Amino acid sequence: MILMLEDDGERIERFTAVLTSIAPTLQHVVWRSARTMVREVGPFLASARLISLDHDLEPQDGETEDPGDGIEVARFLAERPPVCPVIVHSSNGTRSEWMVGELELGGWDYKRVAPIGDDWIEAYWRVVARDLLQ
Image (tube, rainbow, N blue to C red; front, top):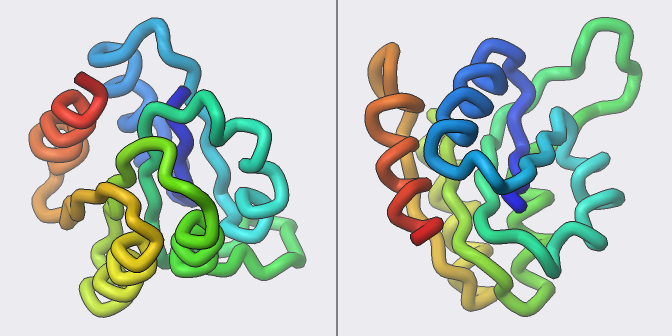
């Protein structure tokens, strides 16, 4: 199972296409809110093979709850035993460093993928995800 925190619909479609090509048998679950992910992710962790986290999250149209940010999920994970590698895929460099710091303190294996260029999901995130899933 692949777990993801991402709020951008277009990126979710691109991640889904990549995941379907590199891990067609693995189910993936996406949360658009860090707070919702923290509330719901527990039962999924035992079967997780990869987690990918964004930092900056915007509320969806019509939503009133603050979606929080990726640091909340990184802290949540750091308080639990590591179960799989994590990719931090945020363009917010400072906050990405905070996220990987939390993961490192918790003993989690992680990689950082900076979203640089128009095809970063297909060209770079894909390679990192594929390698971590092997």
